[in-house]
Image (cartoon, rainbow, N blue to C red):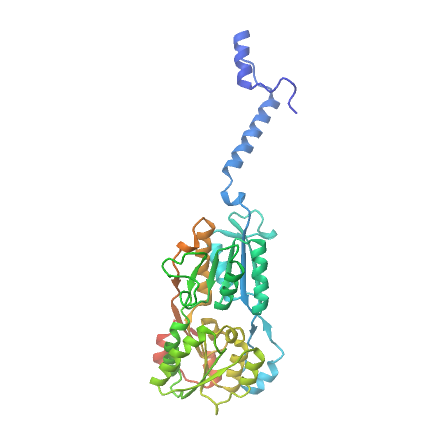
Length: 383
């Protein structure tokens, strides 16, 4: 505590002493220490990075799921042995890519183990469930006023849009092939409003998938497609699939389902006598239950072709389409821009380039010899 009468500055006191006695008087040591402490505190406060003084960025993530991870097996006997080993996906590939890229952009998750680390703090709240559950999660995000919502899939983006209509929150979409056609934005170049993100272009590559499937599996004559009736992305994809199949003399067996149980019942009818291959369509229900489809493919030795790269990792013979991981990484760029003041409607929607992945481990299991010219086209080969 500073004694009474010590509030006068050291310089003022010194000047008065010079005037009175002709020589300065030294400041007491305790006063010098106090002044030095105050100046140091003021300097440190001014020098603190802006992010250290900000509240953590609140990010809400909405996704359908969690998906079950397929159990690797070759043939019916191995499937029976492995049937009890099912695991659930805890972190979608999109979110993995998002988190890894945020780290590169100097963002730090607000957790006790990260205390003291420099960087912009953030809290990520990942909520997965059925579509009705996702609606409840979106409503809660709107009530809490999170800073940004990341919505995975067309259906989920629509729910987020509806639940934040009265109190808009920036929405970053993932897994949407046609944002303009879905009515989310008026233009890719200038989205306007509160929705932007990376476009998946999954629908637009549907015809190319049929061509690659035929090249990878020359004996493809009958191909199963599975989808929810009336779901816009898969309806549009079927137009391209049928057109490409017609040119390649492939018969399409178009099966529709509305639940996981119906999908299981349909897949129970799959065997080599029914079809030569299965095409995975850009359909939220089918993608969320890809484990059933891929396990059936390997069990019955009927090759499957995926529309996202991770499907090849999970057991499809091959996959062509945007990388879920890379899409998540690009979403981090949008998030960073918005957190620094950019308006979502002024950030152009950019497509993610497709990649072609071939799984030779699955090919061996299925008894398929992948042509060399197909391997030369692959961006990634799983061995």
